[in-house]
Image 1: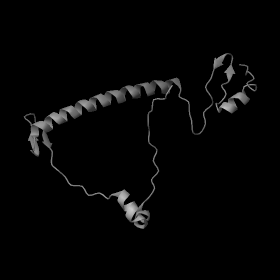
Image 2 (image 1 turned 180 degrees about the vertical axis):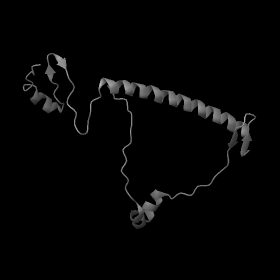
Image 3 (image 1 turned 120 degrees about the vertical axis):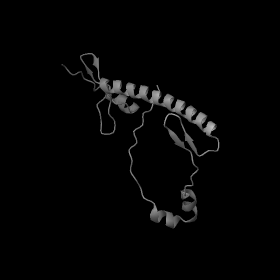
Image 4 (image 1 turned 90 degrees about the horizontal axis):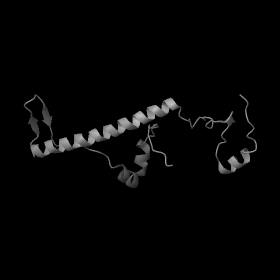
Length: 132
């Protein structure tokens, strides 16, 4: 395969901050991957489509689950326990949790807040629909 000269396009692309697309025998190729950005292969695109489908199904199932729970909670009223005739048991007891109000602590006692705060690095996996 013969590589075509894209040098004449580079100044235009630099001013637009878009990576040049290289032509090889009239076939369009995506820009090259970098450390921060990788372009999906067709195999990964198929997996992404399947992931989106599964996430949509999960959301629909979660909505159905919440509706069923609400019906059961309405039936239970103020009762803490429910026994079914099919061997299931539901517990719905009130609980008290003790939590620190971080914003108030930061505002009123910043030295204590700074002494005990720690940074945690995370890398969340998010699937976002790109705006076209």
